[in-house]
Amino acid sequence: MEQGLALLFPVFLGLLQRAQGGSLEMEPPDSVVAVSLGGSQQLTCRLACADPRNPMVQWRGLDTSLGTVRSDARSSVLSVHNASLSEAGTRVCVGSCGTDTLLRTVKLLVFAFPDQLTVSPVALVARRDQEVACTAHNVTPANPEALSLSLLLGDQELEGVQALDWDVEEEPQQGEDQLLRVTQRWLLPPLETPTSLTLHCRATMNLPGLRLSHQRAIPVLHSLNSPEPPVKTSPEATPELSSTSSSRSPGPPPRNSSSGSPGPPPGNSSNRPCRPEIHQSPAAGGLELLCQALCGPGVAVGWTQAPGGLEAYQRREAGAQAWLSVPWAGCCAEGWFQCRLDPGGQMASLYLVPEICCQTTPPALWTGSLVLGLLFLAFLAHRLRKRCRPTQ
Image (tube, rainbow, N blue to C red; front, side):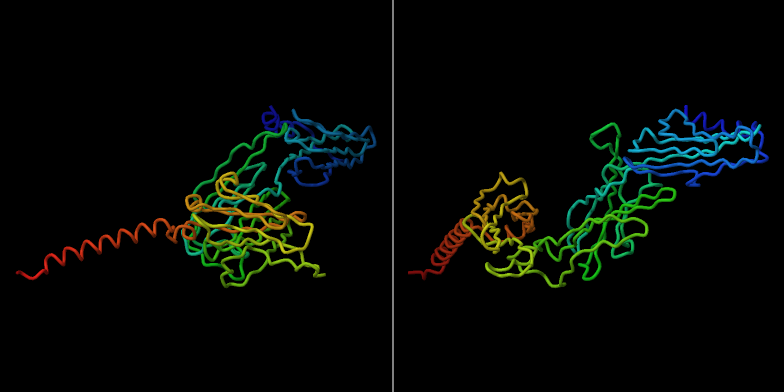
């Protein structure tokens, strides 16, 4: 209905007499005005009329929720509060100046672009071919002309990237406004571990008179057991602001520690935040991970994440220390182990992969292999003794 009426505007305008002594001015002057979902916008239409006989100006809508209108003889102000998707559409300002009728139109575009950007996997590994996906959640519009997703190394687009697919799906509906999630997948070339530049996924919403961006850092690990670097998601708007992330030395981290520096020892008056650490050590049948915080009394740590779910592991927690047993079978599942400090909420993470857990032969298998080897040597010695026995 709205589209059909909009197509008739040129006909109506051709039939209307051109105003000899009047004009309509719009504020903002753009023919398309974007307003965020839940936001507010004010459109003002002013009539300049030299004829004093009954000047009039008024906003009209086309099958849309018009909004709140406040008018007098020379101006009409349309206010939209808590904008919903149903309020998007064309608004018409109609003015009368003597015997002349004037029309101006503006299209109100309602968009959603929250800072809800996720990447998968959460970290990449240097010197490997791998796929990465970046998803913008609860957005609209979702067409490529309005929304774009890209990979940046520093402030330049990453070279050698192959775009795989672009998926648009409906988010689970939480209100009357149906929003979308958009996922872009790429095949990446082998990456060297950056020392001064950070890899980001960037989502950009480009609308008439408006350009917004959000970024999500994607850590590139030196090796599969490198600790998880800190990741910060930062919104951006024109002028765009750079996302910040903590710098790290290019050398590999210690194998037995997690991300984050140790907190001050008990009794230390330092203002540095207390952070937990994760240490790993061999144990019967697997590995044992210890999360601890050397922060003095009144703190506690607990495990919050493990590959396959925490219920698959044996755990024990005692204040500032928490243990988690990783059996050989379960240890071969690659993924992040994470623990949290309370109060404060500081996190520590450790990435375990099959090479760490499975490269060392379990004791029972090593013993069995040794026994088989000894039996085989004894058999060979017996055969050689029979063949080399001198003839009587």
